[in-house]
Every structure is written in C-alpha cells, then in structure tokens.
Length: 207
Image 1 (cartoon, helix red, strand yellow):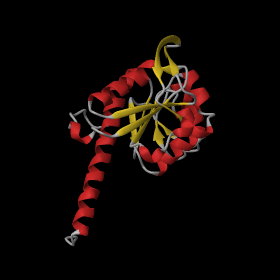
Image 2: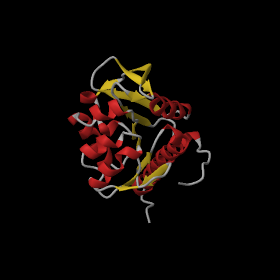
Image 3: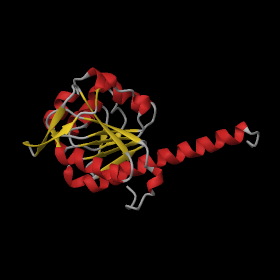
Image 4: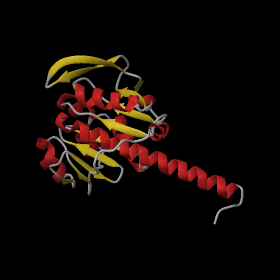
C-alpha cells in the first residue's frame, strides 16, 4: 500500500457506493468507511435482502441498526461506482448464500469497479467464485478456505490486487479506508480521461 495521502474531494464526490449487509454486520466496518466516504461527497446505499434495517454488532454484541436503502433484487450494478463488503461473522455467513448478492458482486467485478472487503466479507466473494488467483487478506480464520478456493492469502493490514482492496479486522480500518478511497479516485481519473478523449475524437482532434 502507498503511504496515506490526501485525496482531492472532486475525485470522490458524486460517486455511488453500494454497501451489502445483513443482520450481524460488524458495526465499525460499515459505519466508519461509510462516514469517511460521505465526508468526501460519496453517495452510499445500503443494500440488503429485505426492507427496513439491519442490526449491527460490536464484537458479537448488538449495537446500532442501519436503515436499508434498497433490496438486492432492485439493485443494478451498472448504477454504482464501487462496492463495500463489511464483515461480521453472522452477516457474512448468511450473505454468502444469497444468489442476488453473489450476482451483484460478480457484475461489479466484471466491470472492474472498486471492491472493498474486510474481515469475514470474503465469504461472499468465495461463494461467488471470484477469489481464484486473487491476492487478498481477510479475518485470519478464513485464510485456509480462501487458499483452497484459489486465493493467494497474505497477512497484511491491507492488500490491493487490481480494483480490489481487502483487510483483516477493524484494527486495519485506516489502511482499508485509504485504499478504497484511492481506488475510487483512480476510477474517477480514468472516467474523466475517457470523457476528454471522447470529446477530442468527436471534434476531430484525436491523434
């Protein structure tokens, strides 16, 4: 990972990030990245299996609830710029069995959009068949399963592989959030560059 640096707000503001969660989501892994993104103007949407709210936990104990913005069946991956997968063992164990959640992360990955996953969150990616050949980390107890699924697991605060950033536990949140911001900023830069190229081509100034 690169040393943390300030990312200009214009590279993040207006982007839309989907957060996938069910009851038992680890509160800090949802709330802290969401707050950090929203401070930079990122629009976040909490996706879940049903309307209402999801129950957050802190180390297994009930904490706050979070209002659901959209159900999985209504979510269109083309409408989002990135996806955040917080952990929490109960949340992740249930989420991995939702076909619509699997389909959503597959679609995001196929489009090369930033994907941030922490703690037990990689269970969904493993069930969706996405971890083969990926450098990544997770809650340490998942290491053997992820290796068996073909991942190259590393014990590090944050591991970047292409448009993925992964981390182990809430203690790694600073590096995790910074890495996700960097991925989103790079996506915006590519988008702006592509728009400029299209404009030049349209007026006949391409090289």
